[in-house]
Length: 90
Length: 137
Image 1 (cartoon, rainbow over the protein chains, first blue to last red):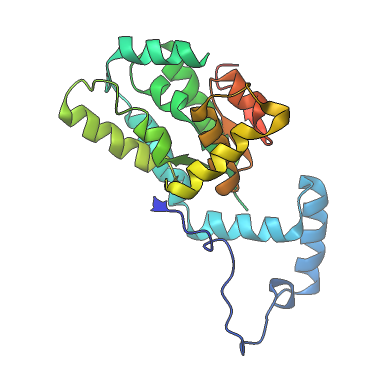
Image 2 (cartoon, chains in turn yellow, orange; image 1 turned 45 degrees about the vertical axis):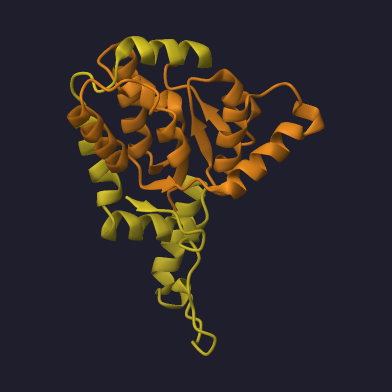
């Protein structure tokens, strides 16, 4: 978990740094596959690449929350007060 | 890119004690994680739990830790959020339709660039400009 910084999602590139786009690194076969896959999943090719990187390098983004959900046991807060507050929301 | 799901106070209230509702919310969140969503919440959502008595200081500490592990990001609360929420409240189309608490959550959903909100509150789901999920359905 980290606290939000508004700029975290934006790639940081120095002014003099040459821009290398991900599709410049791929072979024609890989580009064809991505085009097909993006049609199948109805998402942009860029989104597919980002998801693949996230799954490969940041698996804890999913593992840690899943483990935490499975760790939920017994009562943490007073249930009557929780129920009461929930009723005001529902 | 992972989609961002905002969890409001009602989600944390539902997970805070053993019952049928907790199981449904757990199942819903697990499903969303499988579908490549990440969970986002806010200091404001957590602060709304403070008025509720904890079973013990240790339980409160454990629960806080669980919330932090479930969420990939916790949106901070500062004065600019209240300012944005006040403008939401004054919006002529939605005047008298929302509480201050709902307006703050709506502002945080926008500030946190969330793609959807999960809440047990029908008004928050209805008034939000993003998709609203009811975890109990």
